[in-house]
Length: 266
Image (cartoon, rainbow, N blue to C red; front, side):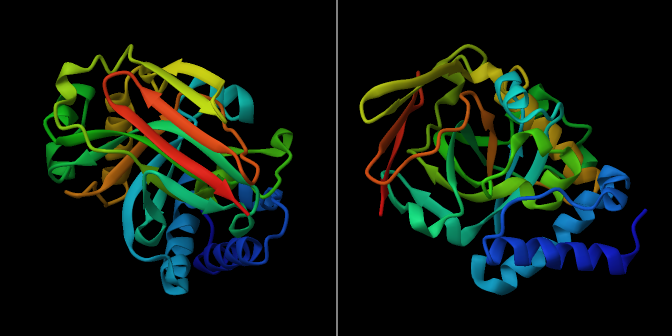
């Protein structure tokens, strides 16, 4: 287990790397030898620094690397969680200045709006039990900043400690009648400048978006936290990350849930 001093110093170094737009690099090997729980402790400290810097409060959570496509792309074989901050939640259609990000990537996801708290007393949570706490499902983009990373150097510990690169989200319209949608098999498609950019299905995220939601609820409960009513959860990308250039228009459609759109600007 890492000392509190190491936790704090590592969080501050990660914050400075993000602030100065230094190229991504893994944390020191001695730090990465620690249990993954310590990576989440570093993330907690990083969250406090981000809030103090003006990103707002935690408005939700993301789950990274839930699909085989994303695990193969990054070389990391397990999911990872990170926080979403209130000041970087955008409605669709969004206009985003690429220059404001350190190598902007876009991911293609089912978002879930939590309708009731998911405390530890209700767990362990399952795909079936979390369904009763879902107020709405939404088509969504996750915005990531990968810091021009060399993906061959990625590791789960560093990704978690650095809040899994979240730079915000773009949300489509909420669908409260989500029970009429086959969330295991619904087809997902993206277009870039009206050209096909990829295809998947909603079940690519751990088999079903609610499996991802349950995984996150249990992770937070083990850490003394919980998903709260009103939070948004990003359940993982069914299509590999795209990196829009200025002028690109990106659209994502989920059968039965509608679409979300953004334009990358200069």
